[in-house]
Amino acid sequence: MSDRPDRDVSRRRFLQSATALGAAGIVFGEHLPPGYVPLGIEPQDPERIPGKDDLTVLGDRPLNAETPAHLLDDEVTPASRLFVRNNGNPPPADGIDPASWTLSLGGESLLRPASFTVAALREQFETVSLQLTIECGGNGRSEFNPPVTGNQWTVGAVGCPRWTGVRLRDVLEHCGIADDAVYVAYHAADTHLSGDPAKEPISRGVPIAKALEAESLIAWAINDEPLPWHNGHPLRLVIGGWPASTSGKWLTRVDVRDRVHDGAKMTGSSYRVPKVPVQPGSEVPDEDMAIIESMPVKSLVTFPRSGVTQPLGEEFEVRGHAWAGDLEVAELHVSIDFGANWQPAELRRPVNRLAWQRWRHRLRFPQVGYYEVWARAVDSQGRSQPMVVPGWNPKGYLNNACHRIAVQVTD
Ligand SMILES: Nc1nc2c(c(=O)[nH]1)N[C@H]1C(S)=C(S)[C@@H](COP(=O)(O)O)O[C@H]1N2
Ligand SMILES: [Mo]
Image (tube, rainbow, N blue to C red; front, side, top):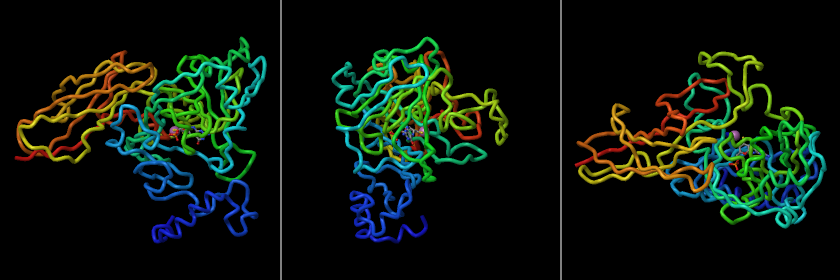
């Protein structure tokens, strides 16, 4: 990446148009090894991710980008503000034809294997639209100590758009689910970073019970528009409330398995955490790790932006969202004194199951000076967000510590 910042805009524009042309625009493009990403093809500046709005780029090969908290203030996350997490090379945009894209269904425990175009899915099954929260299992990773490797997400690998598609359940039931079904697995069209066509970048899934929930979708639209390329165009799974790694993008195949799926990033330390808490920095043998299922209770302050200046005596509106994996959020509390006292905030019910919930609160500050506003959610089973970073784990998953913003109160 060191040779990149000095590259001038026109050259980058040229490379962008080369992206649109695919390998055909690149001299000697016929020699590119399969899966190889040419330097400069992936956008590098936040404003340069096509269709995205000021996301913070954490890495550009492959592209990984998160949304600053204050840009997540919309109740329904716009596609332009939905984070991007890529494990491999996305299928080239110009090679995706939504009209001929096919989803195959199979696996040991599916009775009648079948395949569907996107149009056939729309015709044969009921279309549903739901607002569903997806959050990367590694959101918040940057706060772990000792540090762990991987994308250093702060708070913005989360979003809650309105997704449209069909229920995974309806399609699986149409094909027939055998009694010994255990897990539902996805396969996708992105390619492994090594370029090895025999390897998949990621192929995960969920237990059959989660797959059969009414909210588990095969989606083609976000907020009534086709999925953005980086978010899985033209078809993806959306598994609300679970690590977003279960929401396979560029979906080509779904298998019903008679065992826990053993695809790429299902094993070892990927998307798994120690079964019992470990001392920070420990090495944990694979057999002592368990697959992450529902995400923990969490919240964000999305308004105002951290660092705001506020005149003393004026009312101060603070607001955000809260979510709790498979559960609902029951309470949201706000503190302006570093957690010594908590004030209950107004908290709305979700618009549908597995959607995040709007909270808001009006505050007054007692004197001029520097404050932090902390928000803390409690789920329907009474579990609260911690104020400090919880359970260290080797890959840095499930950090649900309270979010906070800085406020300077002036005369
Ligand atoms: N095919 C495919 N699906 C994928 C991924 C991927 O790299 N390839 N990344 C997963 C991970 S780890 C996350 S967090 C979510 C991110 O979804 P988004 O990029 O639409 O925000 O997609 C998941 N689905
Ligand atoms: Mo993720």
